[in-house]
Image (cartoon, rainbow, N blue to C red; front, side, top):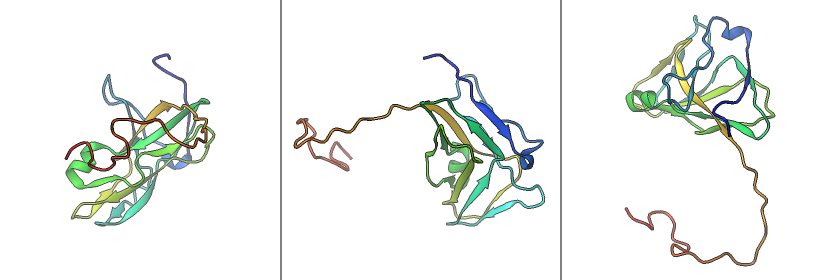
Length: 152
């Protein structure tokens, strides 16, 4: 697998003037996504509420790739704001606008301003599974032990 892949991206009119998603460091896994709401209409995210934030971007991923929309750790740690359906999945055949579903788990309202970095997008390869029905599964040391079964 090569170090880079080509991903076509289109800015919609309401994203004019905003930067394209970008890696913020040499080894960053995610490209930061910015809010493309109107500068005249910041989005107020009350505690416990959620909102779909437009990015003004559409992409064309290569076959056998996906884009994952993930939270930004700083927003989560400082404000309790995170991606509700993390990770959100963008399939290779989707051509609509990328939206970021943010939720405020914090105690204070949070204002989302135009151009603010609100999430990160990670491009990842996809392996499709062929499911095979069986009567029994192979045994393992863990067996059916689930939540908390391997420790605290």
